[in-house]
Image 1 (cartoon, rainbow, N blue to C red):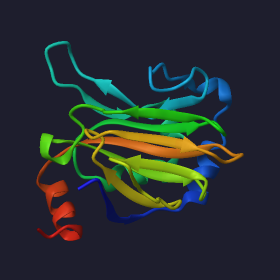
Image 2 (cartoon, one colour):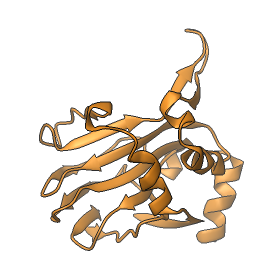
Image 3 (cartoon, helix red, strand yellow):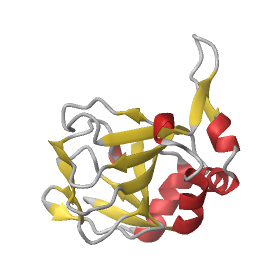
Length: 180
């Protein structure tokens, strides 16, 4: 399975309204060999808490505490989260084909995407299959497979991205939409 739409929808306009409070300087450029510099920006919304000998628990950071709707999105997912961030891919930018090793349901870590701002000229391909995501939808993609993104539009592509550790709750969610 390359992708699976999950049974959650969120108010993309409200998310956009909350993230509009952040300035470009609040984001950092993601260094990634699959992306040209200064085309993919991120802002983390949770921070690790715990001692050096503990598995960290990730809790809302100061930025997320200013965003009650985003906090409710995070709390929808009843599993441990390892990241919750805003990703912005600049207009005409792309992420070259690559794999994010270990990010599959079968391996116990899933990457969830919630598009906030997108359009028909944004292409996400997983194993060559286009995954069409609309604003406010919630998607799992198997990023352990070869995938790429092309923003062929004149506006930024903005997604919320959450990495979740698979637990019984998440297994039930997947079973509801993919009862195999």
